[in-house]
Image (tube, helix red, strand yellow):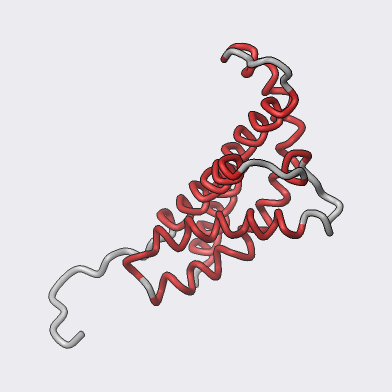
Length: 155
């Protein structure tokens, strides 16, 4: 593999971590605001309260997602070589599985996210898993091998 190809993969990995972190941070901040709000908030109040929560969550969430995706994306790539038609699904499941595994390991780790360690409704976890799955799906799409064109006579 050429150095340029390795740098491309690293850049795509960092992009996937950034996208997953931003989307996951937005979801996580809204979950925390909903948990702390005593009365329902309108959109402007949610956005105003969301920025400080988001800025506090991003470094921790970025570290958790960087490690989770570093483990799960190579597994998804290996499986995608076998199950080519389901490449998109494998990468999305890798991201969702990575954040789920991180959630199971969070009580052991010193890094914690407040609403991840408290029991939450299923829709909240589903929203966070979907947010991270989008970032890992993006990585899978950007690193997809080029389709071979032309006449293939003997395989």
